[in-house]
Amino acid sequence: MIENDDAGPKPGQQIIDVVLPNYITKPDETEVFYPSEVKRIANEVLDAELGDKEYDEDLSKEWIVAICDKIKERVKAECNIPRYKIVVQVTLGQMKDQDVRVASRCLWDTATDNYASVNYKNQHLWCCAMIFGLYTE
Image (cartoon, rainbow, N blue to C red; front, side, top):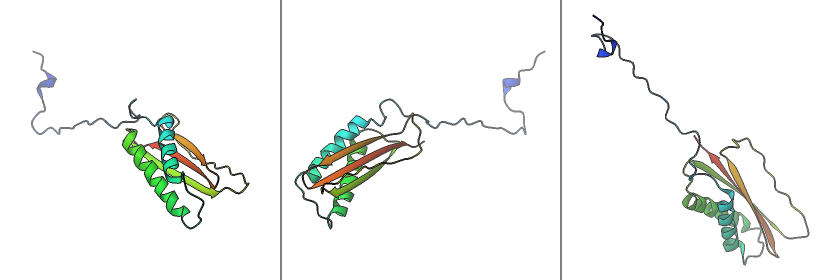
């Protein structure tokens, strides 16, 4: 007679539950950071916030904080990217016959992370907004 080993645990035998990892390592196709959508949002925010303003050194910090908050808020609300950390960096300066180049470096996963960069100019000021989308596991 053959005994069935799948009959269950024997009395006094320790039961070990095996739990497999269930975390998500890549975003769904509908939850990806698309730079084109983020650029559209950033352009709209910059146009609305800086469209009719002249450079003011005392108020520029408040403008930068407001622009960063609005871009981050709208990207989170409109882009459907719940597992992304959004980092916004805004640089603002006065137009005075100078040239400025804004650059950034970081380490990231090229398969999931991305960025968008937007420049704005009028006759009184210039602005550069860089928006980074970093996927968090």
